[in-house]
Amino acid sequence: MIVLTRLNRHRFAVNPDLVERIQASPDTTLTLVDGATFVVAETMDTVIQSIVDFRARVLATALGHGAAAPSVAATAPEGDA
Image 1 (tube, helix red, strand yellow):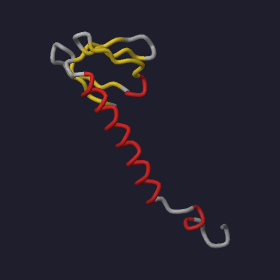
Image 2 (cartoon, helix red, strand yellow):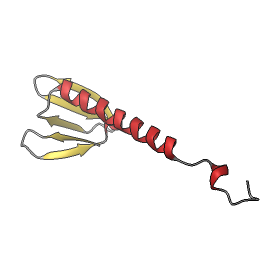
Image 3 (cartoon, helix red, strand yellow):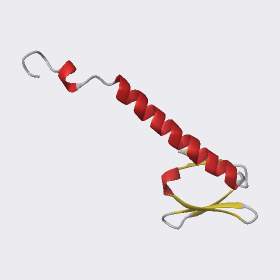
């Protein structure tokens, strides 16, 4: 999730995988795949960077967990591998 700010200063989180389109004319408007729209205080570039950062964190977390996960053979009791 990325955290954004509505024009009334209330913060909310949105799943960046659901963002279909971002427009800046002049306010930044997000359109989600279900048609929902949100006008936010952040610039379009800031929203895009937030999405990039979110995806980088997801990949880094996945790679970190994958590297630390023991193999199936290493965790199986003797005689079961």
